[in-house]
Image 1: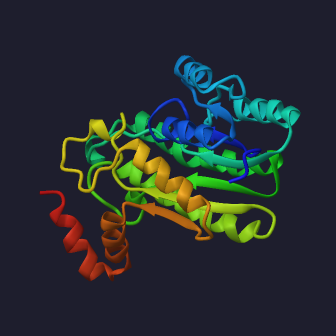
Image 2 (image 1 turned 90 degrees about the horizontal axis):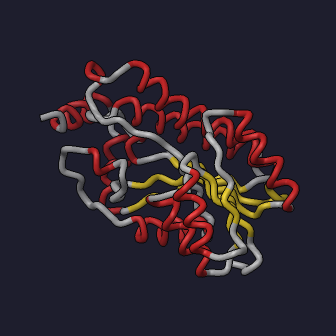
Length: 245
């Protein structure tokens, strides 16, 4: 990766985003760090050094995002935009609060839509836009239904965007498995093949530097779920039903 690269990370205040920021900073990138949580975001930028900028925003608020993009445009073009911001509330559909469910869709899916419209305005020609789906979006799974549905929407959005702006922007999809963050710490079920944010960051950077559309990890989990999602419903649904027990 050229040391002069400028990268905008959205959802950078903790978890995978913060780990990505630390790793890319080590590699010499100049970072624009965004999230809703202003204090940890500014602390991270200060820890990384004077070349990095904290730019708080809310992806569910289009005015907030447009204002941030306008500030970035004044700084010059960006080489990569990596969008990781998401919220999560585990539980069965019948138990979820409707307002919380609507907020999850707004932040995760509509937020990704906003980024898909705004990012090309600040990216250089041929720059990279990476949206974060999830292996939870591969197939309907119990516990976390609205989150899974929103991430299925993000996967579909990234696929559509890849076709629409091919040749102008390099659209990528990131599909993490279980990563040890504040989101997954809310789960009360066994999470196989859990990885650290640092391991996730390394996998993402390696993947984004290659040519494949999707970066998914860890493969001992993702490949099994890809196979499950490829099965016909008569075979797949009985298997997913077992996960509720």
